[in-house]
Image (cartoon, rainbow, N blue to C red; front, side):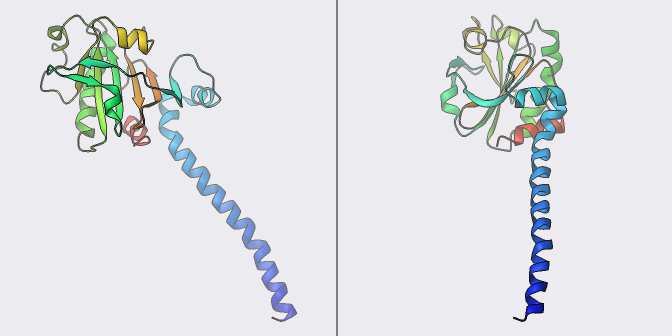
Length: 202
């Protein structure tokens, strides 16, 4: 290689390497923004930044440091549903009661979410009621619902294990049983932003 060719190669490398670095950084930043977009849309930028900085409290939770408590509750069909047996699936778990108007307003979107995700194969939509009987639950969630409906009459799961006091509240638990997200309050869970958020944990 001649001296002129060597100089040309050095110049090209000096120009190319920073451009490659900038391009790679831009791609990574774009991917991060895409992952963050549904969370920012649902939580707002300020609360999202607080949660990312490790500021807990309410409303909402975002993280990967909490393992979901194990529990077993009766199903609407007469069986038992156990959290530790659900590994490999993303669980979208809604706490509600028939005495909660926002819960009742939100429930059709939970039902639609169950319909939209039924073919995904790795997502289960669960609704845990703290009401006194299945008769009360079935005024809102019929027996043929695609939602996995559970009953926690004495609130040993909802209040004692998860600490929930206000309804509705929705938790997303990943395939390893780790609590990744909690949304406090009612939401349209069938909207594309919520679906993108759930996809992020598949």
